[in-house]
Image (cartoon, rainbow, N blue to C red; front, side, top):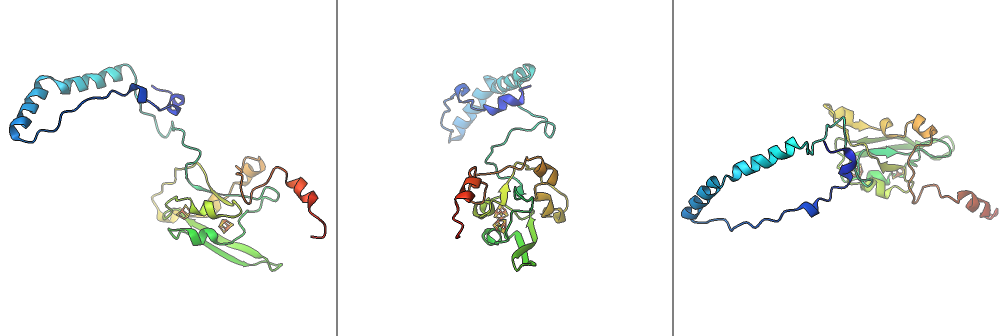
Length: 205
Ligand code: SF4
Ligand code: SF4
């Protein structure tokens, strides 16, 4: 059986065999002639033999999902991740509502309220994965990089109610504390020289 490592290189174009195919017959006499020719030349058995030969060589391209999985592209848009702020561990979402507005499936719902100091606080944030089409707009538009797409694509369920989710998407605390939350560059992310920039900020401001 082909090991998973070899699936990374799936360019098999060098092995392509180009065949010339005659134009399809139009009149019935030509169609009949083609059937006879194909039957007598045993093309069916040639095909069967090739399949049998590859099977005997153990050259199968089947993997044993879910025990084995193919690697997916790092740009693949699977289940969302809701990020935590690196400094505090709080959710990075500021409740701006941009993801809710841009979502073309209308599956994000955000509820905010005034906090104790008059600041906006996110009261509820739900994402109905049963409606989501994984277009990625919400991740594109988020100014805080609070919502991104992860690599987990196994989100099947028998119940629609299981698709309405919020808490499961937030980075789990143990993963966060282990420093394993994935960070991406861009607006809202930590910059490597953040400390230097803060020190340079004039006190008057
Ligand atoms: S990926 Fe697209 S459809 Fe899904 S929540 Fe984001 S904006 Fe909506
Ligand atoms: S766009 Fe980002 S910060 Fe704004 S509400 Fe959505 S997840 Fe939160």
